[in-house]
Amino acid sequence: MRGWWRTLRGCAASGSMLPSMCGLTARRIGAEASVGSTKQVAVDEAAANQSLERKLLRVGVLGVPNAGKSTLINHLVGGKVTAVSTKTNTTRGEVIGVLTKGDTQILFYDTPGVVGPEHYHNPDHERKVKSAWATASFCDLLLLLVDAERQVYRPDHRVDELISLFPSQEVGLPDRPRPPSVLVLNKMDLFPVDERKLVLPLLEKFQQKKAFDEVFLVSALKHRGTDPIMQYLMDKAKPGQWLVPPGKKTTSTVPVRALEIVRGHLYKHLHKEMPYRIDLRPVSIRYFADGSVRIEQEIVVKHRSQRQIVVGRKGAKIGQIGIAARKDLQANLGQKVHLILNVVLRSDKK
Image (cartoon, rainbow, N blue to C red; front, side):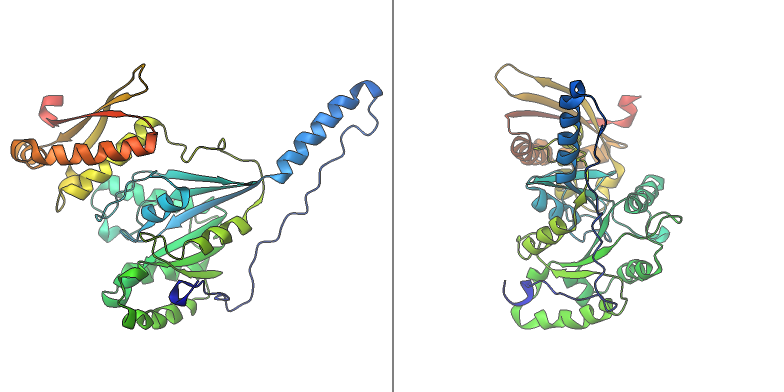
């Protein structure tokens, strides 16, 4: 690793806070068992040993909107499991990404962008943000992502408010202690070479909070500096049962993944607040003998003017969205996809 891509070590002023490994040993089963039960004891002990060999880590990824959380998770997992867009709060619910490597499984909980009440768009947005804090409380480790370029040139007070919560141990539910935390300064690729040193005062400011065990400087989009993060997370995993079968990159179903991917392209291709005023609903999924799948969804809008915006002139806009989403779906599902998107008025639905 070179220059700013190198992992910064020893950011916690109070010394190492590495979680201690549980001194678990396989329990001796049936010491006084009869000869006839020896085989069963051996099977039970083998299962116990297999359980102890496996490791698990649940990681909650937090940050203010548009910090690059979805981009980072998609890269670490190796596939698009959550919506990516330049618009804020494109993540819906607790979309999980899963990485299983060797004897270790890491579960990434990508939470909606955390903001204060004054930034809520609507009641649904408020529920999403509260869900983010609830998710943080049961994770083994928190990964706070910050858009370093924005924070240097156009400081976001929400970042300072969020980081100020970490030393207080109040992140998550009020009756749960804060899990160990790491700080990731993202979008370092946006700095001109001669201006990368501007991030140093920001680093010093955050380190004074004494809230993070480790700090990483990365570009999630360019996949630079992310390998040390992965190794760090692998090292932090503790003995435990895997929660997801090996080979799966997400626990979401095909309909949910399809909605996530199409929703991401709606945010990408439409402007201003338009996507916040529309709903995306599944209609049907059909599998064919040739291995392809037909996915039909409805884009529900409130007004005719909104429908005109989504459809575009002679269907150009919805065509662009459909083509881009179909390509992503095919890459994600590993099969040919027939994507049908219908734009309907809410009054028509009634």
